[in-house]
Image 1 (cartoon, rainbow, N blue to C red):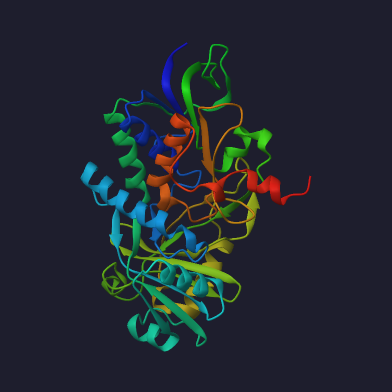
Image 2: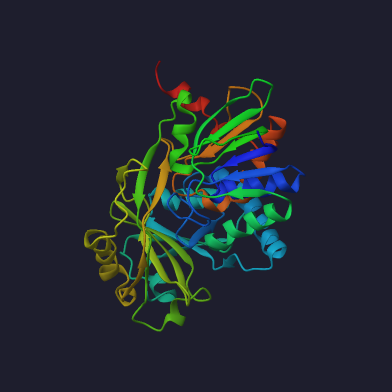
Length: 382
């Protein structure tokens, strides 16, 4: 049986980052991925993601987001490619909405540069956004767009430079403690490999790998979309338009500025369609596009141009909308992460380091109590 220092199962955002973190620490790493290199069937596809410091979901995440920002910049230098484009960020909705109160709380508590804008001021600055009159916006200076494809590829490249070996189309069907210590991992073709340390980052499939923990996860079908605006694309480019998240009625919409290679990204944050990760409709239909176009017609009519691209990805959600990052109780050496609840990509470099800490040392300097599985057992009777 081949043996390594560490095995990483799942090579999306957090798995690739964990592989890089482990390789940087001199570990002999094997990465196993069920799909192909750069595959987007989980939660790590879709080309682009936001990076926001003032987290309206959980304002206490600001320090982690700031650390991730610095690590993305470091990865850019390490791989000689552009991953993060700074644009600023606009978070808007009714004055009493969580998106406004949470973003403001995070900015104030952590001394971030921000402004409060009313609907008229938003329309004057960005005519493409025709938001409702009762909308209030929190404009954050330090926010931007991440190229998720480049971020994942960058972490994989760093790991490979450190000697990591990756196997694709290698579905893991079992992992278990080995008789002589460490762990065994078995793939669908019957191959068994061993390691002293194990990291499980299988995204929407994580519950299959830790079934004894009873994770209360809900997997949600998402449909990111890119459009070619009818206005001059330069007027909605990264130097003119911030990333934005807007609460419009009961639905939260979001967008990333126009990229000449990709288009203008506009979609819904939490579509509300819950699925099993292996049984999901991956065809983008007219009903999907109409939900976004209805918003565009009313709130961004000049952006309502041809659809350039659309695809299906998955959110893995927890009841409290917070991540799962923890050690497995089977014994020291196993760490796992998932359930980003739709806002975890930006943290990938930090989460990769946390996973390496937990797998190698059993502990981390990062305050991860809010991410531990125990919170579910404490909140669910019995």
